Length: 245
Length: 245
DNA sequence: CATAGTAAACGTCAAAAAGACGCTTTATTT
DNA sequence: AAATAAAGCGTCTTTTTGACGTTTACTATG
Image (cartoon, each protein chain N blue to C red):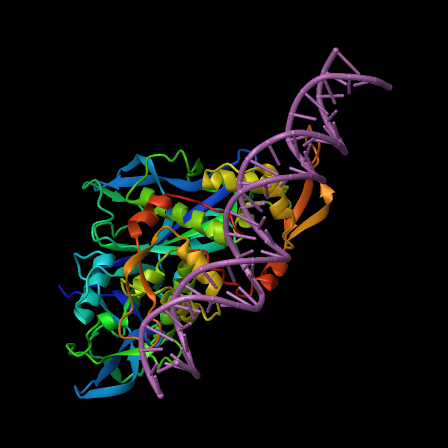
């Protein structure tokens, strides 16, 4: 009995990494390989998201976590399933080329897209065999398939989510300064914030905990370090709905 | 060549309808039919969401819209794709029964779940062949498959979305009173709101437009009618991001 | 036709949050 | 020791929110 897939299911991962030094929100992308029908390998000058088939006995969430772990070695990273992409022709490409990792290139492929939030520094790219590279969200390279659209939709979702939940702290180191937080908001949202008002607002949050530590190795006045207490946050907001339409 | 699907793709639609009279948020569900292997039809005492296979040349969005139109006759209804459900065993059920509409019952089925927002009164259930019925979100019947989970996740998403965007007006008639809006929020969010403060706040929004009309046929002082101006709203909020973490 | 009843609609005051902006402090570099 | 530059504090005003008392306008009823 010949088995023929008529549908292919994958996950794609938009890995967001924030870099505190450059104040840049980055996306982790991999160089795309193609091979011709004759089997020669061809390097195509574009990038794609990491993604892979969903295994037979795997949940979608597990699949996304697996893909991330294979690429970065990281587990327990903030993850959000944000949209499914499944246009009938979404993977159409050069007809004589077949994506090396995907023998089902000509099938309809539905992908469940996730995004992850982590610190750029957390990922050790050198130990990776793959041609992974960070790109600023503002300077994306040529992207294969519909991956630019996927990234931009992830970014939109992230921006909105940023304003509702304290996910900014997923992107920042455990110990951060008030200005780190402000910079992250400014960079991600593309806005300017008054430092003095922002400071006051943030310091007054009970879940922003002042540490007995200051920055070291800075060439100006070292700033106070803080941490985010998820415990306190969760206790404060066990369902607080505020109408703000 | 035998063709065997190893994966089944469907959309499921959570149709939310708000009833201004009963102040209840309802979900449209259909009685589930099963048939045994011998071909007898059996009525199972539970309900399911409307959903169907995604056709070969159809986008996911189109598929959801088609399913809604087949059930309700309605088009151009607020629609949101909110999550994909694809656990390997998510459609497991009684082994000797096969869902009448789904010959792929034993396959892994990934469903892209949408919710729709409309007015309960808008749907004429009588002209429907299907056994569709409205249920209050607070009094759901026994549900088949994982559809209770899907509904509850849709509801959670709706509650959050409600607080960000003016989607409440998708659930209300074109002409409504201030109290209608308050009732809808209270019912959907399960909260109490002070009428005088809510009133002030809502009336001050430029996109809440007072009409030259009042309620008719009420046995008390008839209330002023208002409408929601999407035009004005859109002009006001062409990206206003407010940090409120 | 007056009156009672009820929901609609308006108003006030205080507390809290947001916005704008000036000034001081402190560690480091020169 | 002075200069520098970012960190950090303070003040004043405006806006928003929250709590709650009062008035108005329509229908129903006697």
